[in-house]
Amino acid sequence: MVEGVSGMSTWGVDSETGVLRDVLLCPPDNYDWLPLNAVARANIASGARPDPQAVRREFRELEDALEGAGVRRHYLTPEPHLGYQVYARDSSQMTPWGPMVTHMFKPERQGEYAPVIHFYQALGCPIWRYANHGHVEGGDIAIIRPGLLAIGHTGTRTDLDGARQLAGWFAAEGWEVRLVPLDEHFLHLDVVFCMVNDRLAVGCTQVLDPDFVAWLSGHGIALLDTSYREVMDLSCNLLALGNDRVISALHSARLNAALRAEGITVLDPDLRVITRGGGGAHCLTMPLRRDAAQKSFEGTRSAPDPRRRSRSGESVARTRRLIRAGEAGAVNQSLTWRDLPATARWASTRAPFRKPAPCARVLVSTSAPPTASPPCATPMDAWRCCATRPARSSAPSSASGAARAGGPCTRPGPRPSRPIWRSPSRTGSSCP
Image (cartoon, rainbow, N blue to C red):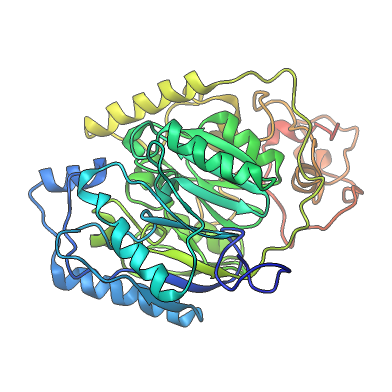
């Protein structure tokens, strides 16, 4: 429960993006790569092994980044037989009402429940819930903002029974919960999606369920798109610190440049060895206390589009193509335009709006082809597509200079500090 909110206790979080004050870590004393996920299995199969000195050095860099951000660190007691205990995200989940102890799927990790229970008892923090139906792991839980929760489920690490039990607890408190299907190849939701601030996230639209992407857009959340290759490098697995700051691994150079172009402060410790085990900054940390998020999001959700149908099957097929390409050693940065659903086509056809940031900010609120203008169904959509668009002239679109003549858009609302890139094919469109 969040400090400073009436009726709440000291420990708790109500979002992924409030200012981080306290975090739970586990020293990597017994860290080793275990064949529990696709990333670790590939590295083990190559014959590589983690260098303990490099692991300790990288963990110290993470600690230094947290200290520099003013975050207090708390530690689990490492157990010699728990090689992945360093990924403290998965064994528990802090909520607005206290911690929940998860029920992990892999036998190699199921013993992590005991040290985390002992930690919360020593902290004097009452445990809110114990997961006891199916399996649920912390990496699949995204507390997006107050009243809004997303839970990934692959059928293994988090299954439907575990996801539905957790969803029921939050729904009973009045929260809206979205269950997000994933292929087990991607392990957890935080491998393909993480929040940056209250209006921006990073995610891979090639593998995320298009309905989930549209749901995020309906709540005013834009995506910085990442490639499958970056997903497998754990680039999406970043930690939001609040106040437009994140911790993102040094090797995620392309994404870090895009985040900085968006005005985000990026602290970038070197985590190359640790991420090769299947987890990055987000997996290594469990926030214990964040400042209360601003509850100013009422009215941002758009009305459902009756023309939009579910495309989960399309997402699954696309994911399987990516997996086959990765296993064959021929992973491309993106598939062809026609391989992507309409909600992801903006990312595949857009150029970078500022070098050296090739990641595209995705306009995901429309299912129309790229020749159509995205609807301004929500205030945030109108803000993005209209805030800096010049008024339209009567000149033909082929005359590029004349087509952009005129004054600025008169739609109300805040205006970004810099122009937003738009396709030349959309210069003649207008806001509905």
